[in-house]
Amino acid sequence: MIGTECPACGEGERLTGNRAGAIIHLECLTCGETWDRNPTPTCPRCGGTDMQAVPKAIVEKSRGTQLSVVGTRTIHLCSSCDSEILEAYHRNRPNPLMPDQLPTTET
Ligand SMILES: [Zn+2]
Ligand SMILES: [Zn+2]
Picture 1 (cartoon, rainbow, N blue to C red):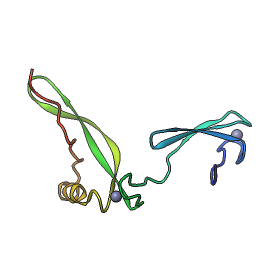
Picture 2 (picture 1 turned 90 degrees about the horizontal axis):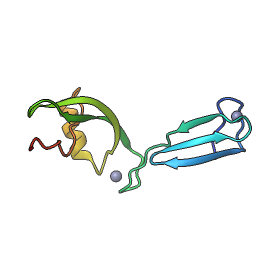
Picture 3 (picture 1 turned 180 degrees about the vertical axis):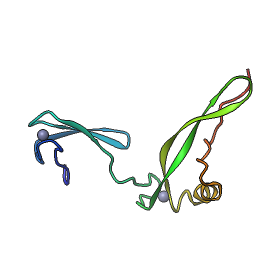
Picture 4 (picture 1 turned 180 degrees about the horizontal axis):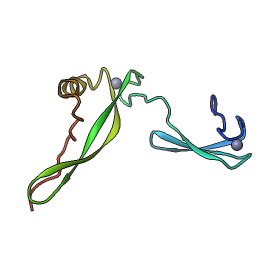
């Protein structure tokens, strides 16, 4: 894999990679070290690399009908395809982006 070296022994050739979503799990065949590599995010729609990392809220239904933010995960949004979402996010900063679909409060 071009541009990748084992962080433990510096091996750059005898590496094996397993793609898992946006992340590549790498293993060094020389020393057995394993690590993850997060490639430059690319927009799946337009192929552009002008992506912005944005925290997105993880919302869970708590007691009753209250929804609470239990954490955030980082998502990547495209500056051109997701410009409206990014605009809304920047307006609400530093609040994280809310999920597109909130867990239903119906029983
Ligand atoms: Zn190694
Ligand atoms: Zn795009």
